Length: 151
Image (cartoon, rainbow, N blue to C red; front, side):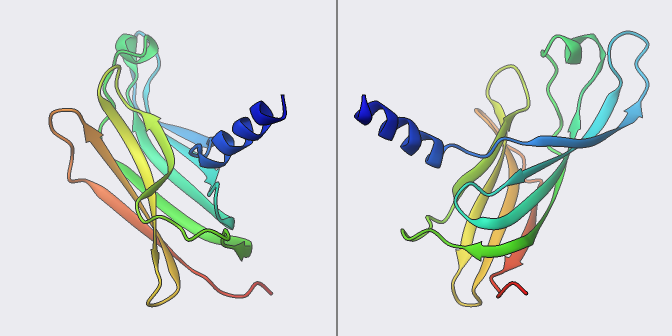
């Protein structure tokens, strides 16, 4: 029983963060089904306490969007900030570790946020990009968070 609880905690510790929707704006009216929109979401870095990220991304509407069959574009923007004392884990961070991900089509397309630790200037770098089984997109955005003392 104790082993199962420890395994569950270990899986939670390595699971990408869940996002909370902060707000949405409509970008195109659809007569049937939801409008096309931009969604703004917030998530916390699951391994680094004191960092919050806001991600804006396009979400397709219409009938196919309502049914979950539409493919969202790869357009996204990210802003990450220090929101409290930054606490790095005891184990060194792995560059390219996924901190957030969301499916953007029925099959094979996903948006990822990954983290890098630029030790040279003691900064965390967050990269958002989209990939697809056959061909991904070069569209991407980054945000940096210097690791500094909290007031």
